[in-house]
Length: 243
Image (cartoon, rainbow, N blue to C red; front, side, top):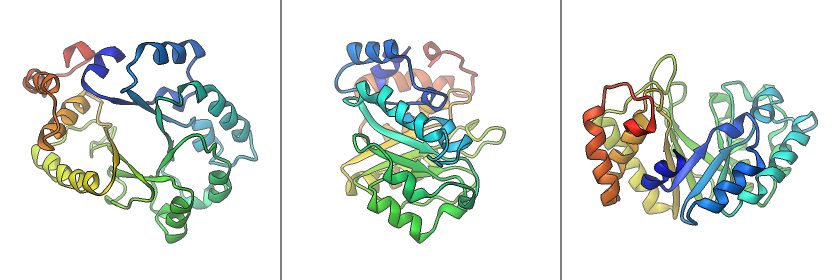
């Protein structure tokens, strides 16, 4: 399935690491079988971000160190580690600067906020000082904030569905608006990672290919796939073969 995905896309965001690092055998397989042109991003475990709220004085310190070591064989293909935070007030978390200062410098990082209390000058300064990307998000709780804090950009398009957010299909008008935003980002920044997370009914891959067509960067194999996928919009998709 992953090989099929990488026929059409060059980077994949790994969600499973949110629950724990992959097995060594899986990492070895990925590194041995995938092209050097294919890359991953991966989420930091929820036991660090959620259970222990970035407080590395707890078990989170050991969990994070273990995670770094287990992911190290993937570093040639691992573009970014994603720190996905829950929608909770910043005052309930451990010290942010202490957390940033403990991060392994062998990796690059992006952080996604889901509560307005994080949007403040001190946080922006820390992101810039530690060269951590602010994740530009499209989601129901927060307004879109296009602030860039380091030398790459990370974008996550969740959508505006209900029960859950990612039960959503972006309309042509919404895609056009985002293509304008992404065009500005790609003009001003060398590297931009953008992911459609609206995967509840499998809309993400279609919307991603539609976006590439709007931005005039779609390849023939992608164009052919999009033409086969568009008639399936509105039909519940359960396997990658149905895309």
